[in-house]
Length: 117
Image (cartoon, rainbow, N blue to C red; front, top):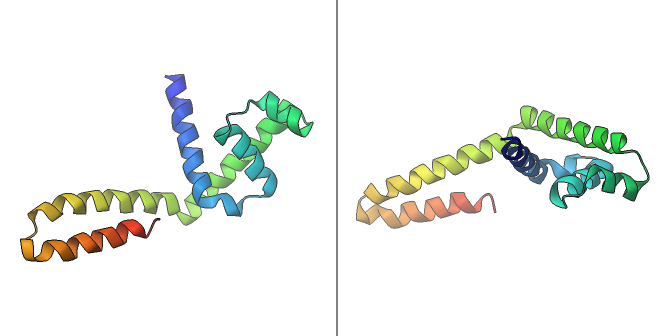
């Protein structure tokens, strides 16, 4: 159970990071990349930057809070996930659209999907 929660947390932070990375400080970006992308331990990061494990932990926690605050204010991840859900629903509905309208509907769906690319 604990491992599953850590995976969920890692996925959440990585998703938030993908949307809000440019809004973080360079130090926040570096520590989050090391910890969540490169799977470095707190000790490894501490040794790399010559600071304590506690300092690394606090930097990472603060960066996570910043990401969550951006999401609360801007909602980009929530909107992305909602768009994705609506596109899946639309894809299912396309099966029932009359043949003469399917191509236009398919192109519209592809255009929506490409907006996030």
